[in-house]
Length: 135
Image (cartoon, rainbow, N blue to C red; front, side, top):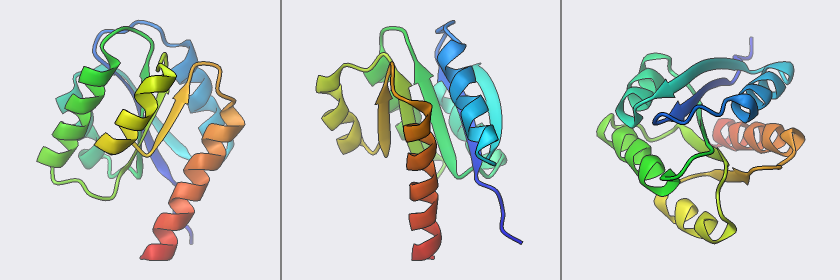
């Protein structure tokens, strides 16, 4: 039996804009993935929940200022939890000029506001397919 991809969808910090995260959550669920919608959490809590829930992907939705700092804190917290095989995907108000830096930091995929949900779903499926074929 094939296991379903498990995704933790979270909003680091206190950003109260939920619409995009809920739309992506629904699209991933409709594609057969199990999505844990955590809402607003500290970066450290996101990492702890990711480990506790044994997720394959952490999806971060950010629509407020401070995205670089918050994403760096999430990545650092995942490192401190000794996580190596969880993909990190970020969506929201992300300036194009920040995308290369985010990828250098270890973000697997960046989807600025307006990205099509089909692209996000396909990206996660491909990432999981690559992960399974490398095992």
